[in-house]
Each structure stands twice: as structure tokens, then as C-alpha cells.
Image (cartoon, rainbow, N blue to C red; front, side, top):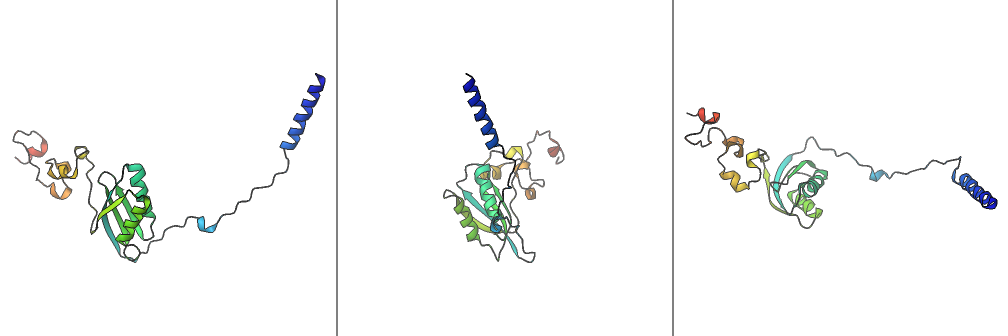
Length: 176
């Protein structure tokens, strides 16, 4: 029994001496300069255009829409990119000299084969989306035919809301 204890203590002592080194050499890491993220610089004299286009094939807001949005925003010459999952719409502001609508379409379709771009059009201002509770869950046609003021765009809400004759709401009382 003493022999086993003696051998066991020698083994523990040897492991402790081998495992615990008093000298350590620092780990040296090299960084490839090309892998360092460079900051995107926008040309202040550039002519920026705004484009809107539909994207079919998205199945979720976080995975699909955000991935497409990030890919578009990382493109050289793109000032801003926003993808609205609910409306299946992308809104991109870009430098006309560096980016074309075709390159925007190619970027989206390269993310995944299931994404299809349709109806690319240049616009003066991006279309607004309704975030009010009364509009949630409605299709674009339902929103267009909706008589509620919150579903109408800001330009068309000025006193064009149809009120019922017996309506007691403040907005209807002002019209009487």
C-alpha cells in the first residue's frame, strides 16, 4: 500500500512540474490589413437618387429583410438602405455614378435565389408606411379603401374622413 502511495505522489509531482511552466511566451497574432473593416466614404458632390422596389420571397423580418438591408447598405455608393418586411419594399438612396438599379437587383438576388426584385422605380421621396394600430394586418388594397384617418396618407387626411351622422367623436364634432 505504501508503494502505491509513493508512486502516486511521484506521478502527481511530475505532472505538476510539467504542467506548470514559470516561463510563458506571449502569443503573437498577425492581422491582415485587407481584413480590417474600412469605413465607407461617401462623395459629398455626388448626385444621389432614391429607388424603391418590391422584394418577393422574404419569409421573416429579422432574417430576410435585415440581411438584404445590410447587404444593400454595405454597397459602395449606397448612402442608405431600408427594407420594410411588411410592405415587401426596399428603399435605397445611392450615388448614381457608382450604383445602378441593375446592381441593386443583383445584390438582392445574390443574397438568396428565392428573392425576386420587381418594379424598380426612381422616386423623389420614399413612400411612407402606416404604423397605426388600425392599419396593422391590412393589405395595401384594404388600406387604400379604408375610411379611417390613420390609414390615409398625411396628404389626404385633411378633412376627407367620412363621419357617420350619429358620430360623437371630436373629429366629427368639428365638422358640424
